[in-house]
Amino acid sequence: MKRAGIVLDDVERLQWDFTPLVSVGPLWFGMSHDEVVAELDTDVPSSGSDRWGVRRAWFHLPTSYGSALTTYYAGSGRLSCIAVDALHGPQVTMEGLPLVGRVPSELADVFVDHMLSRGLPEAVRSSQYGDLGADEVGLVLRAQRAGDILLTRPVFVAREWADCVCDVTEGYVPDEEWRVYC
Image 1 (tube, rainbow, N blue to C red):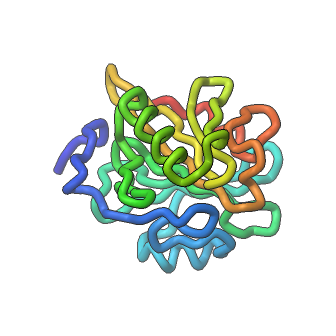
Image 2 (image 1 turned 90 degrees about the horizontal axis):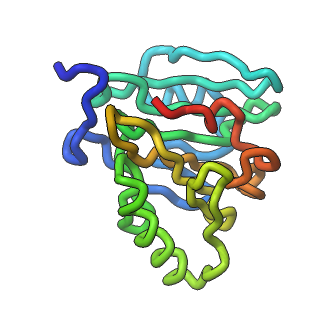
């Protein structure tokens, strides 16, 4: 078994697709926490709440050697945000573009070109931390440490949380997620 700090190769990861503002792999925005646990067919995850009452949970998956996903639930208790761990999470693709565990600077131009090809030339924004994303697809490409390098840790949100997805102070992405670096 690999140590927790090892980065999985793409072939070792579960392979998931992202449908903007709708789903990430088998998870659909709007699911209850119990539905997420059942869909992932995993043990009950570690969980907690932030200072505003947003519930979160950390999941290990069959292919992971550490936390693979963090899920966040709105006040209604419905799934509103999914952050995929850069080291152990599934490989999530958007129309064939792999988003997880990539070097941020290498993915940046490809992501911008992808958004341009979708006819969204003004969609790409940058967070106050320099993470790229787009409200129109409910995605921000966070950076996470993997030893001495940074890799992409995509954060996907439901339509209700997509406004200002890259804005650390105005958006709905929980504060805790903006602090994940290791």
